[in-house]
Image 1 (cartoon, rainbow, N blue to C red):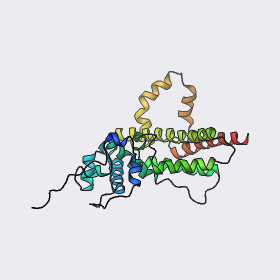
Image 2: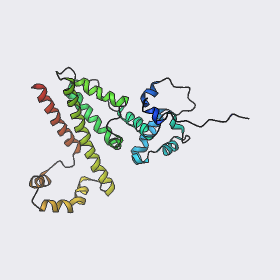
Image 3: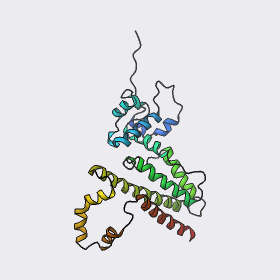
Image 4: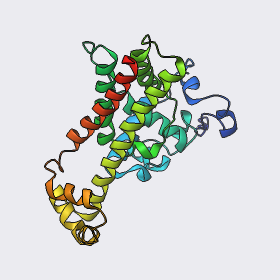
Length: 249
């Protein structure tokens, strides 16, 4: 009589996971695999699903179906949705690289900011996944930015504040851009012009009150309303200019 196959077991209990992180567990020597399932395959499938259908579509059961494995199979590596999000965030942060020929703190931070915008636009679920994950590739990206600021005469606290300021600008600006894109998708608007036309009744009334003269001038005279990349890079330049002025002082 063939031996009964033991069901897949969770990687660890939630209580134990509080003591040992996902990444520490994955660094340990792995037992001989019983299937082709790996953390990389799990992350790739989950990211693909979130990109196509949004973060809410990513469930452990749906993921098992995408991977063609038993519902409990992924629990060999992750304890649940929270750790799955860590795998996903780490996977997309692997996309952030600074070319070897980019040197100097300003060019390095600028290149990283542009890469981060591109990554977030490609994976618009990232803001919902959480700000602080402490994953290896997320930390590697932070290390590159901090290393670019190291040796400029900043004390550790100021160096971290400078890094956090640039990061906050990038995250805030791109989250706003993603919000507009989400609104356009939900309303079926395919361009900036269609979006303005859709919002026209509300905007027209607001401007007619006469309470917002500078904003009204923007609506009438702005020539780059549909250039989010220009707006992002211009704002980024202002942030980096402020940091440069501090360093020069």
